[in-house]
Image (cartoon, rainbow, N blue to C red; front, side, top):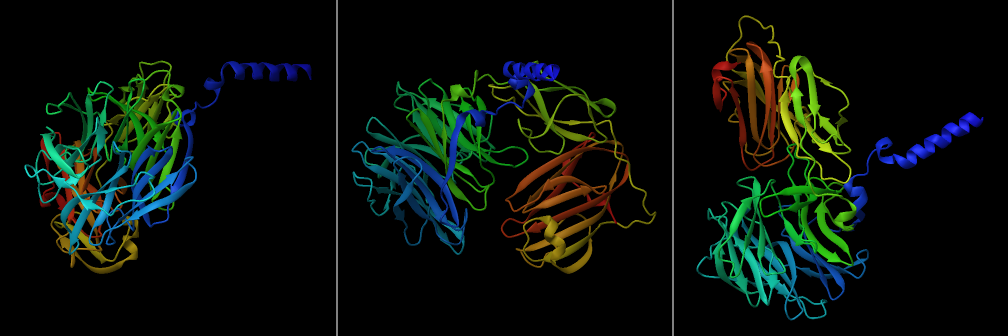
Length: 574
């Protein structure tokens, strides 16, 4: 009995001394997030938030509609709270003939709330106009004016101007307008009344759009720019009068970014994260003027999400955002403590490396011997809580996409290692009939689905043979699907990369195994895979569906002896 008590006492003392090594480490989210609450969900789709502290109350503005882009014109809701928990509606703003969206709150020098609003005009379902508008509250914050048109400097005005978030500095409102018709599309403007904006300069960024502006204590202006065309973000700075700018590319793509400058000099960017597995989240990251982008916190979120508002209040960081990770797209408010409680250092853990991947055995390493390596083999993104923990060499039996990160308690996680391993493991070719025919078989379906697994439930309208992958045999341009089957003839042993571009969803199978998952409802998007294949015939299946809009379906490949190209009809058989 005494020995048993002694063993338990020793175990207790060990747990006191080494709690982190014996139990799973706390995540930064565990240490930093005080609370996350859903504060509004009354509309079918609640999105695009802005947040301010005004007269001791928090104000949050967002769009209400039936979808991200929908047949029903959006309206703007403004809600307020004394404590950040109990919220009530202050204003509901709408205008006939306009899809109102992207509300942005600020406080004017005479202590009124200024609400910038984007107004989209649709004719026959097509976007034909973009008119920025503004509404002002009274000094109580209880009553808002009807939206009025914003006037853009005639020097740069176009038929589609979208004024983004305005930031007041020394009595002047600074904002950017992005103009889709121009290559360098972001124009910096300024206004003394929030209605009439004069041109300052054009940002030297190609294809930029949503831009957030902040000011340092000494008056330097900082800009973070979303740039979907380049699939990245940019950060820039300028001294007064803000005509000359220096921009650097951020290390990550951003969406609906917001920026707050903390007292300790840290620049914190809240944005949508765009990971390779498309599992999008709302995150907070430390950014630098050199393009540094270090993810610090991932908020509970997913899918259609982000467009955050940021407020520091009573030593807490308040973050408003929208997300669709629960049963509907709703508005959330997160409260976070000072980042120093989550991190001992903002220096990122070194990225893990592959030491060897020969003969189906993969060995990994990290320069930081206190870090833990987390990895996945299915294309998903590893995190502190997701994926396998690397403890011994990994065994694989085919060319595999390895993703890995290194994590260490109280340090930002490493960059993601994405690398194909096992390229010396070849997939065997298929034994086929001698008299194969050219082309691929197809089955054509009509009806509405959300993913390719539902295609077989639709009505099959016709079948046939096509020379290559194409949707040309469709009877209409919306709510249809195809399934292609057959073989692809690989000319010689080697490593091949396949590229599948589609709008909407698609899946590509090779030798009865899923090779590319580009499924779900989405715009034009490319996914790829690399595989080591033996010379000969390999079984192929491609499933594709289209809900409406762009008619994109392209299958390409590249090899060790040829560059990326459309797959020729000469290599397809059935």
